[in-house]
Length: 223
Ligand code: SAM
Image (cartoon, rainbow, N blue to C red; front, side, top):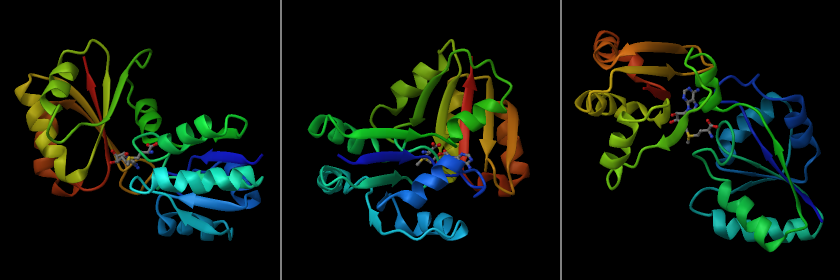
């Protein structure tokens, strides 16, 4: 029986990869990746050449069957998402669940590493003894319910948000009288910044610095 390694990759800075992750990538038989072009950049940086297969959200269930067949043949398989930890607002969960159900004897190992969630919390200065992670809020159905629940939460709530929606989210938070928010932007990259303040202060920041609306964001709503 083979091994399925769920490998965390960098969230921006290509140096944020563990020695164990690199060894696992070097020793595996095949890498299944959310996007083979994205992982190729990391592999070429570390001079690793491996057969690549695409396994994204749309193909996860079907490709999981291929992975199961390979595991039965004893192969060492890696799965990587585009950035950070697979399964955290990324493909990987269904793959793991399917392998666990259909191949209970297969070894599934975590090769932990970067995640925007933990990176943002680690520099936020917020008490993280307990927090809620909601990932991406739904765009339509369920959005208002989720927003209301986070506005009344007694512990910090962490969200992922895309650049073209960050200003809309801040406006929605203002309407719900959310007071304090932390936005961690472009973590581990050249334009990394952490902005903390009232919703109105953050909105003013984005008006004054239009470039700051670009990139990737983790939003932490504090009680
Ligand atoms: N699996 C990833 C992880 O472990 O963090 C998350 C993947 S999710 C598709 C992508 C979202 O994560 C982005 O829209 C953003 O909210 C957040 N994110 C990823 N990289 C980031 C970075 N370098 N800085 C800030 N947020 C980031």
